[in-house]
Length: 120
Image 1 (cartoon, rainbow, N blue to C red):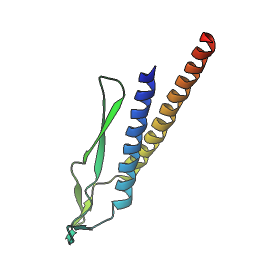
Image 2 (tube, rainbow, N blue to C red; image 1 turned 30 degrees about the vertical axis):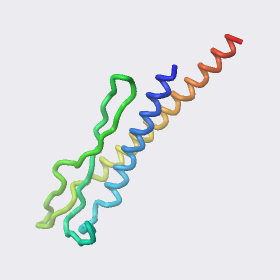
Image 3 (cartoon, rainbow, N blue to C red; image 1 turned 90 degrees about the horizontal axis):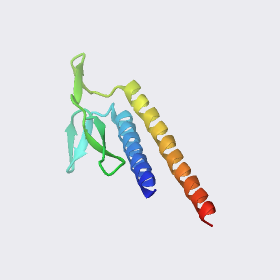
């Protein structure tokens, strides 16, 4: 029974990663410079993406990587390759993932209570 809860917890962690990456992409899409090791570097934001994979033991794992291509040229200027509409979809998916995984935990809890009622 703990497997369902563990799977749901890994799903919550993956949803959190998806939401964090998406929020970072939206917040930084217009950034044109960064401070790296105390030096200002003039380059557009390199967006990230989340790849989610099933684990054999149950649950999922989210891996963060750089989106490819990181930038696009618009009217001769380099810009980050962030599609705001796509990021909004990713945030909605993360919200649904949170709800589904929380529901799984709630159902698991109810099943354990029912089992304890039957045994006692």
